[in-house]
Image: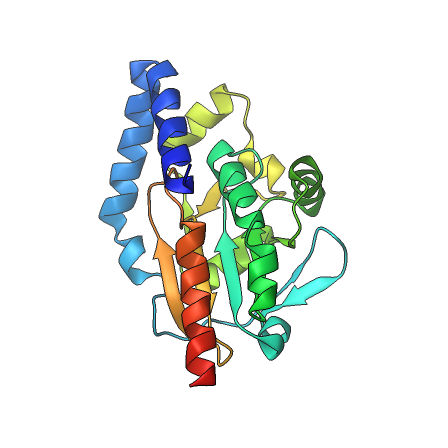
Length: 220
């Protein structure tokens, strides 16, 4: 099953279980995010990715500049280990580690949650690529992906026992748009997969195809 199909099934199952008033809050928040125009103003294909350095769950720090010295980089932004759609996407991307390495490329994933939570996510899903902690969505903001959650959604999350501000070690209730960037060695964005709908993510096969195109272009 493709990641796209697995995410669709998960979203349909979750929607079927939710009370109508809860679903209405979620739908209204997505509509508001769509009207904000953030999907068009964040970092796009053809633009230059900003350099960053972030702490890794495995220890030490990872910079985009260091990754690009060795080859293309895939940088995936996700909401956090509390999000089942993010976890499904992370596990699917883990299958890319070996083929990307064979193409001289690397893969990292970035979320605003605290480094301790990042370590838990790596261990729980046995991921073979670095998870990076982005306190306060600093790097997500550089990519134009960070957005404030509406009060209605904050109240809903709190009622469900999910305190994102505490989980992220920040006073702000803020999330990044889930997005995946394929970045060429010169720092330019070769592909950008962005969607305001958190239940949709880049298909691993499409990511790999984009990196393979870069590898072919570098040889030509």
